[in-house]
Amino acid sequence: MHLALIALGLGTGDEVLVPSFSFAATANVVRLVGAVPVFVDIEASSFCMDPDAAEAAVSRRTRAMMPVHLYGHPAPMEALTAVAARHDLLVLEDAAQAHGAALGDTPVGAFGSAAAFSFYPTKNMTSVEGGMVSTESDRVARAVRLLRNQGMERRYENEVIGFNMRMTDVHAAIGRVQLRKLETWTKQRQDNARFFDEHLRGVSTPSVAVAATHVYHQYTIRVPEDRDGFAAALEARGVGSGVYYPTPIHRLPSFDVHLDLPETERATREVLSLPVHPALDQGDLERIVAAVNAVAEAGA
Ligand SMILES: *Cc1c(COP(=O)(O)O)cnc(C)c1O
Image 1 (cartoon, rainbow, N blue to C red):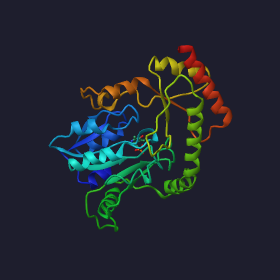
Image 2 (tube, rainbow, N blue to C red):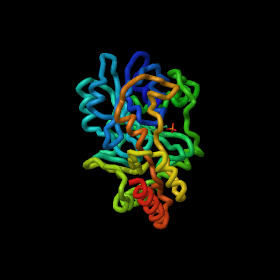
Image 3 (cartoon, protein in one colour):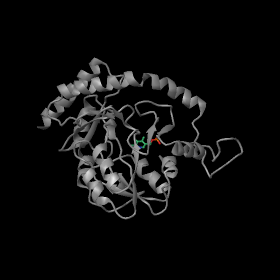
Image 4 (cartoon, helix red, strand yellow):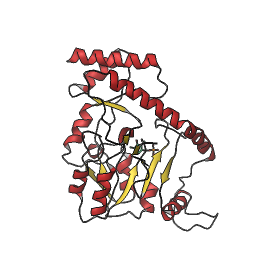
């Protein structure tokens, strides 16, 4: 994402629209190129950047938007790219959590000028560390290739100032094997999610937009009252869960911006992600459902 932003020509003084309900990396890279992250609220339904809020946040300095396909659900790209077109903004997709997600026939990573995928171990596929930029532009692709390798394509013919952000062959080898398994794992995640959708009672299950393919990096429910108590009660029944993310980026000490983003704040209070990974077996799924339903019923 860092290299893609440089390749797209973003820098000092430029404003980039980002959701605050994401991992800090989304906004970090904007700061790292000297640009200003402008935090935008999310849609309640998808947890992704709200197109109306994005439009309202556009200023004369806005040059780009960076929607995040959070939890593996595609951001509302039709409306977001329409906002971008109206205001002549570049679109960079944060697809770190969304390998294989799609809207209609279009996979995430194909909507923007560029997109970035993460291969960190917790993601739907991994190369242990590393990531990938996708783009249709030969110019952007070449710029990223140069930037990751100290500015050179041919040895000792350095053309621009660059970084050492190469993926090692060893990591790439792991990633290539993982890539072959991605489709099967994704289907397993989707099957697990369907089982939860059909069997969970008394909690609000994740919604999927029309024509969206959700790849369930996370299966995230909302618990409007005492989410942390709910998580502790699940833990007591042997079911782990996670909160992604407990603090919106704009309120982290590293940013500390004062803003009112009501849906973002509500999400940080309510979200709870259940295990949905492909290694769960039928017994695990039934145990998770029984625990969630029991805790929901006890709280109701
Ligand atoms: C994991 C993640 C990143 C960062 O990816 P790395 O490969 O760890 O650098 C960025 N954005 C989101 C939304 C993520 O989940």
